[in-house]
Length: 151
Length: 103
Image 1 (cartoon, chains in turn purple, cyan):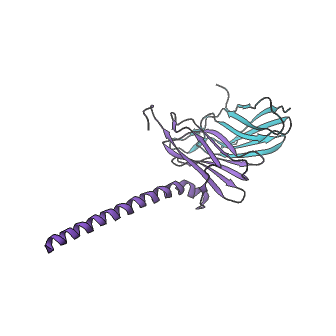
Image 2: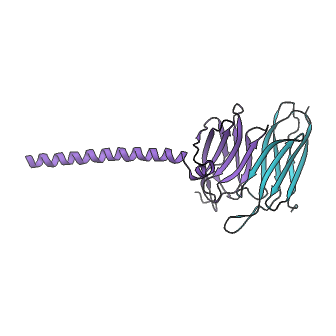
Image 3: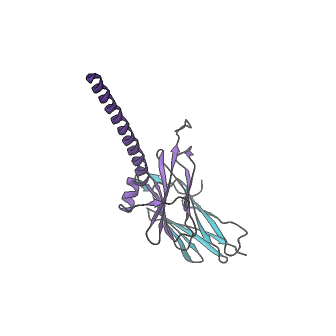
């Protein structure tokens, strides 16, 4: 009897352990994912550790989800007119030099549209710097297909 | 093939006073990189002026495509000249102009 009990207990413990561990792992994965979306080495090195905030709804990044040709990828960053924007940045995480273009607004609207080249599938970030130094970011992944076989 | 540095500009017609308009500039440029991806002959700066006043200043990286198009938005106040000036890392300067008709 006691033996069975013990086994039962240990099994229960084991199951508990697995479940708790699973939850912890799952939670960790979620945290990591949200952490990755925020902190990118490209952003860190450009802004020297200054944190960006989500610019959802305020900063708009127009990009195709799939770029057939990595040599010419049209990208557009724009921001709401209500924001007092100092500069607009366009970053491509996996390019050798992530900063593709920076636009200083001097009376113009916070709008930058250009064609860039991308070496591989990467996260593209549109970052807007406000007059008070706040950084607002919107990012999106652009897949670069070679030979049209899908990412 | 047009010559390197040819700047073509496009402005909307039928512009009313106070409208925000998109200025598009296309420049013929090789945007050449070395084999290991370092800039060899690339554009570094773009400046946009409207009625003689600077409205945008742009710093460009090696990721800008060959013969790039760059667009920005300005507010039309009165008819005047819109000018874009490109500079590359070989010290060359290329200018494109267009006339904006407001009214």
